[in-house]
Each structure stands twice: as C-alpha cells, then as structure tokens.
Image (cartoon, rainbow, N blue to C red; front, side):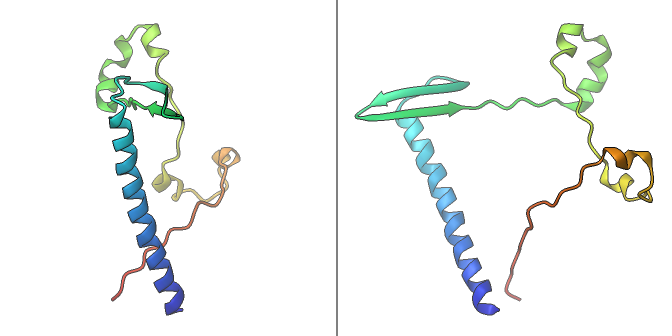
Length: 119
C-alpha cells in the first residue's frame, strides 16, 4: 500500500508543478503578442502558428448590494439577473427524505478527493 501512496504523491507533485509551469508559460506567450483585447477571442497568425487567445472577464453580483437595490432596478436591468435555485445542505439534512422537495432533487456521485500526509 505504501508503494501506491508514494507513487500517487510523486505524480501529484509532478502534475502540480506542470500546471504551475503551464500557466506561467501561457501568460508569457500572451504577453509576447501584446494583446490589447479585454474580452472575447483573438486569433493571431505569426511565424507559421495560428494562436487563439481567449480573454475572460468574470462578473458576479454582490448579494448584499443587490438585495438593497433590486426593487428599484428597471426591468431592463432586472433582466440581466438570473436567479438559480440551489440547495441548502444543512437544511436538507434536517428533512426525513419523504418531503415533496425530493421529487425535484437529482443526486449523482461527484469526483472523490484524496489528501495524503505523512504522520
């Protein structure tokens, strides 16, 4: 068992280092083209390469501010907001499993996690 744990730890360390190095190199490639675009995709052809750079801007809402201003927003601004139902796990655990809500709940396995530390 120790052998497989040590092998996993070694591969994980290699993967983590590779991810970090890939991100650093990706940023260097993007910087080398002096891209000025802020959002969207940009395709550049240079020295026999076709390089597509995806620029991403993520926008989120500050819920406390939204709660304060939502009722005063015009419809065109309200239309920009999507309310997505989600489950409150702590409250769900309090139910006995026979409630009507369970008809709408989809359950599927997630990816297992693993953490190993030498003690």
